[in-house]
Length: 211
Image (spheres, helix red, strand yellow):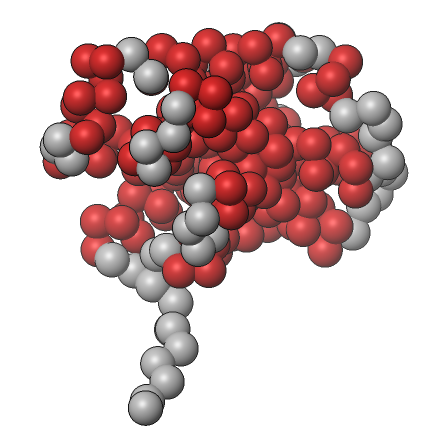
């Protein structure tokens, strides 16, 4: 079971590292900025989760392997030929970035929700969903703030909403079916919702102030 959780975590780390590093490259940051943004996107949500749940020191500091993987992936993304593909704004490149971000959101949301079940006996639905969503979107929020962008959760199509639905789904399924199956279903749900939202431009109502 632990090995499955580790694989899930690493998939999320790689996906978010690609997302963070790509944003850094588009913002014309240097190699340190690319590494920091990739790392922050990958582990930021998990650190916030651990602090909120009283896990001290955060698990990232006790097991630095995910952080090292995030930095390595970010540095690979910094390679000239990959930078060239990103800078050309190819449709395929954009699709890969969006998919990686959706995958990272799915894995980290559900891993965050699962953490609540492992350390709290009979947690209520509110804390399960809240911690799951914070874990899923926290790294992305830090990434956007550091790159001087409006956080995606406030403006992009169905971002935090997909995380909320996935965390809620997992919280309901957790006591009913096999945990790995519940996680797989919920992760897939988040990824599918994000892809559909991007494809069909599904959005929540936005403020539209008239002058």
